[in-house]
Length: 562
Image (cartoon, rainbow, N blue to C red; front, side):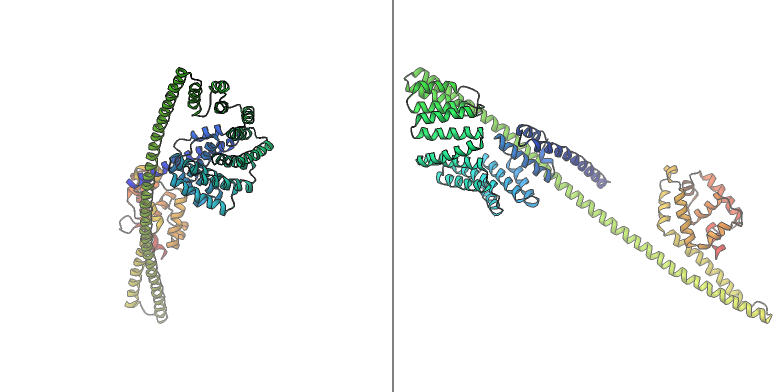
């Protein structure tokens, strides 16, 4: 009973799990359609899937892939390491090399977000090797770019430049001109830090030419800003100013960083009024978390240089307040993130326990089913062996009966020719025939008891409280009559000839007699009460002249056909 309930529970869990997977599947289909044109909507749809970790492995891996794509476009955090590890494990078994490479990239970025540089490097390297082996140049370029970011974080400028150069080569092979231009921009930045300003300028001008040809406004704004930084580093203020202003015109969605760059340019060249002007203009909404505090610090530097000490200290105080506020905000984000991680680990732990329990219950259920099957087969084999043995004995007895009948006919013929009276040995043969007939009757009745149909019908009688449902149908009657007629072929002839004028109800009693049931059981199969069954039995026995004998109805019928 306990195992039955566990199986029912597993079925219910599987049903709702499949239903949740279908809902998630529909949401992911919609999100996938929004990834390129409207990543915000895609990101919202993916976040609307409750506890994605409860999805099956295939659906969960797909969710991680789509989430990574949306987060990449929106500059959001990647899914957690534990999630991406699970997704990568699935893609390694069932995904394409390109899917494996992208998932490796997302996992490496997730490690980077957790400041786990060694695991990030290992995952990046593995994904890069796969991308190079399969000639997946585009994803290889992105992996190299993020590996360069890792080296930038650790201060390894030469390795950073090497990786950006590799990224540029891969993007060039992939004919991804936009990303190729950005890779040149990033190489240029490393050259500025290495005082290779002429090379930096050449690379940035080449990048600017590419994005201008593509007419990519966002790319043009970014490259123009970078070009302005290069010109600023070599003291060409007017060209730097021109580049910054170009970046304004290309991208008006986030002007604060551009204004601050201009302010820094003028401050570096002691043009304090212009520096102050753009520093004040930088006081506008921005997506960059650090621009507001950097603007305040620039105000402090400008006023300090202008010898306006009170205002400089005012900016400095505001700067520290902004830094503290940003720190507190990040701290709160870290706390929320820690809570999310804890909840995620709890869900994963519960899922693993549930999965283990399901495996155990399934294994036990399968084992029990196998044992039951083996027991059933063994029991059925014994039943069939019993039937076969009975059939062999029955064939032997019927053969013996035929021989005895032939023998008595021969003796009677001889006696008739000689005009002799019946000898004693003939009477002995008659007695032996009678005994063998009784044995044949017993064997045929016993053989029927081991048939599967008889067992099924008898099982019905165990559910006597459902009489209407357990009564024999026409199909049941046909099967029962066919089985009895096959075992006792001449019973059908006797019933069809009906020399004693049996009614349909009495014929049913005749066939039920082979089951050896009591009044209650026959009442269940006939769908009537026991008194009615008793009356039918009595009428049947009267017509068969069995009222004052112990001979069973089935025995009488078989004896009539021997």
